[in-house]
Image (tube, rainbow, N blue to C red; front, side, top):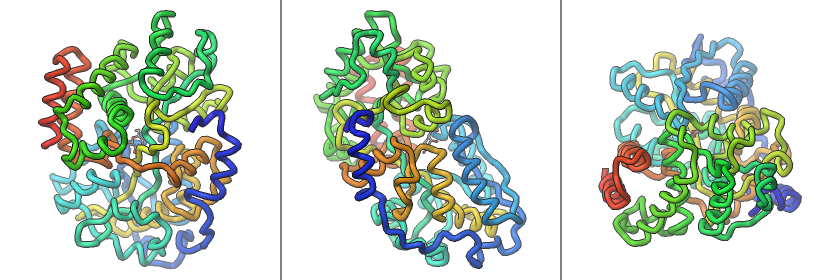
Length: 431
Ligand code: GAL
């Protein structure tokens, strides 16, 4: 897939596959007279996320707009804590949960991260709300599986699906340096040849930011280098972290990091993506929330920016989904239920995802309501091999992610060599 070149084909295809077309109209209506519908007397709801600024806040604001329409009597209290990927929010949330001071609802990634909260008995079974809001048929079955515990109880309502393995590029910077913006790179080696060209020309080839974005880059390199099956094996124990294949992937990561901006540790993802928007860097690897940053600034796909899967990962969709929970002991459970109703509703999902750059978790949204980039994501989600993101809670528990993040930060800041990094990753995967 080359997002900027296959646009017309993918747009046409998107109408036929992916999330398309059920048009069933079930569930999701605003004030459907349910218990959650008018909050059962709730007057407020504290919603805890990390969508605190920029295009992420714009996404949250759009969801709040839908909430205010559906539940005008309930006050939305914004509990957002800044820091991409929940880098600050998740620790703070954990302290609050342990102090029995939960918000009314919080953002959590579908998959292993949600399982952590389930195992710690910190969130409630919301299966009843699926019945009440008519959600049982509107989400893809494998997504529902990722928010379901072993006993079959469902623990959150997904708001969106994001893709992690995307490269964003500035075509002007590429052209100025003799690189074809429509180039298709078969693998990381082919891409790195152009990164070297940019480096030689004194241009920052690849922008990156603080540790979590480096882990995000690492996961896409592991995926590109090992392939989907062996990448999956990193999380189920069938791929040996100490193997020569992983060494080769880490060497690629080391090389890629040598092409990045030296001020990276002081930045978060918006600044790294902004470097590409502003022409201060050629490429950035980031999840597709980045498209919202380009679009918010009036940039057009194909002209002002191009996007393509990380070389070596074409045909693979590195998946993550945000979802919302009902914490045990939430002070305003009725407010939380009202929020969850909006999150699951068609109106809420369309409003939110249009602004956020993600695609609706619901299968009955009309693809033509979404941007050109999002239509390619809808198509890819419908047909690609799906793997789980490490940096965004789908693949591994928070403890593993934290240990991998520590090892990565140590390595990229010069505190360990590659062999040490590899053995620290191997131990981290046991966490
Ligand atoms: C992810 C989250 C996305 C986006 C991103 C950057 O973990 O799922 O919705 O917010 O972090 O902060």
